[in-house]
Amino acid sequence: RAKQRGRDTFHLFDPTHDRLLQVRHEQRQRFIDALNHNELCLYYQPQVDMRSGKVVGVEALIRWQHPDEGLLAPGQFLPIIDTTPLEVDLGEWVIERALCQLAEWQVKGIALPINVNISPTHLLVSNFSQRLAELLAAHPDVSPSMLKLEVLESAAMHDVQAALLNMSRCQALGVSFAIDDFGTGFSSLTHLRQLPVNLIKIDQSFVRDMLSDQNDMAIVESVIYMANRFKRPMLAEGVETLEHAKALMALGCELAQGYGIARPMPAVALPAWLANWPAREEWRSLGLIR
Ligand code: C2E
Ligand code: MG
Ligand code: MG
Ligand code: MG
Image (tube, rainbow, N blue to C red; front, side, top):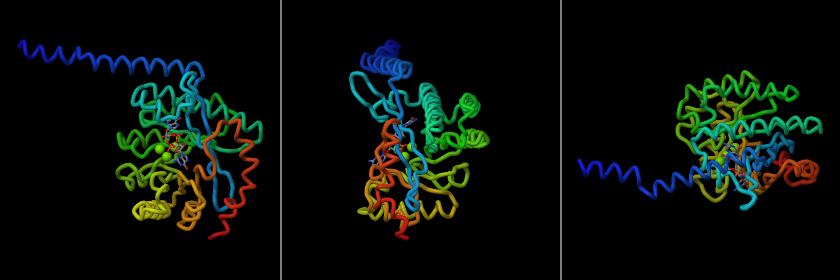
């Protein structure tokens, strides 16, 4: 019994484990402060139709302007709140920010929908659509069709029924869905059949090497084929060069997003980018290729 108790105490009072928990706790407190003190902001990355050259929307990407550590990318801080209720707080903050931005752009005559990333934890909370309805109601001047939600394939995996229900309710509000990082999860096919998804985003990991790696090319081709068969629009992520753009166009994928078109930028930089985009002749004439 002494041995048994010894083992238990070891587990309960393991100093390294204890220390780790404490660090996590402090990091989360710090994140809550950041959320409350407006250290977070959204960057926007344009999405374009390569056939017409039209800018079709932007994706909102979270950044943390940390006073000591500079501008942090999501990969540097989202793991801190992974699967915690803070993901819901962050998600609602992002949606609210995006709606404010849409209202501001509307006044300035910029009519671009915003795609917002929704974490699996957030998508599956039972009052998701109700909260979304409340946030939308607080911005009656913004059309719900200007808000698009990007969800990961894996989000639905945890609980397909709950995901389906929440997504259909949001769609009834006029909000549409994109499936993000498509091809990286399991049962992509099942998801395509079951979920009310309006746009398929081909994961950038496949796009990046598609010109040099035959396997990646095969995946990109298959995803485009499937999306066409299911009559779903698709968008390629991670389009870094004109060569990628041309290859994707030739395969029948016309929507694109990537560093070759534009890096994510703060909202203040967007009007200048939009004004300059028509001058990017080589990108804008891709529609003539097919
Ligand atoms: P994602 O939604 O798949 O977003 C695309 C990521 O690829 C972004 O990274 C973007 O900056 C990057 N990217 C875009 N074009 C290119 C390219 O041509 N080449 C390369 N190498 N990368 C490109 P970022 O901003 O670091 O975001 C990473 C991930 O963090 C996102 O992946 C998304 O899953 C997550 N995330 C970002 N913002 C939010 C948010 O507000 N809420 C939630 N829950 N997750 C977010
Ligand atoms: Mg995304
Ligand atoms: Mg993605
Ligand atoms: Mg991703």
